[in-house]
Amino acid sequence: MALKDAPTSVLLENVLSLIHQKLPKNSASLVECFVAKFYGNMASTDLHDRNDSDLYGAALSLWNALNHRTGIEPYIRVYNPELTRHGWQSPHTIVEIILQDSPFLVDSIRMALKRLNITAHMMLHQPLHLIRGEGGKIGAILDLDNTAEQTSVETAFLIEIDHLTGEEEMDALTAELNSVAREVALAVGDWQPMLTRLNEIIEEHHRSELLRSHGLEPRNRILLEGPPGNGKTSLAEALAAELMVPFYAVRYEGVVSSFLGETTSRIDHVFEFARTRRCVLFFDEFD
Image (tube, rainbow, N blue to C red; front, side, top):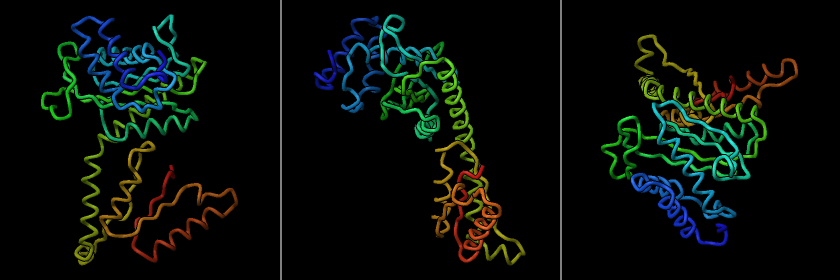
């Protein structure tokens, strides 16, 4: 049955019906819970021209990866599903991702695809509060109002992208997404120490007169490093708000020139401007 010919609720009911028809009773209810959460917020426009068996196949593939995942290492799979090999099919290349839940994941993955000039035709993502038992198998998927017993919070992604035909293309995308996942994990791990350091700098500027009475100056330079989308600009904007000063962003392409001496002149003008007022001056993408 084509999804465009049926209401969304009927289509998802058909997917849930397939789960109970094809899976053992002891696992069907858990898979049903996963599918309901994962597809529950799917936009009706994303359901056009789909059928229940392919939605079932895509969900079951992701569920199996989630249920068999051990440890906290990223799970990333890029492939072209074929009916004869996988039991379902799609005109797009499919990206499955399972990561420990953390900030910045969605934006970082979206920006990675954009950098590679890959269009995401659909991106579903859902944080899942899990109880994993012996061997890492999932014993329960918890609701948001009942997470006290959770043992893990993991985010699952199902992304449809432009059709990739070569193994090298798919391997390159897999490597890039693994790199993004590692960089986000490092950035999030550094967040609390970074926040502590930022609060120290804010305190120094609030008590600058006291520091100067002892011949000291508050720190006025910060180096931020991380993948696109991990919050560098937001942090700089928050710093400006806390200090109650204007925020100015200077982008790399706005000051760097191929003409001799032009870059130096532009940078001099930026600093001359900054010397005339208290502000947060943010140099973006100057790596």
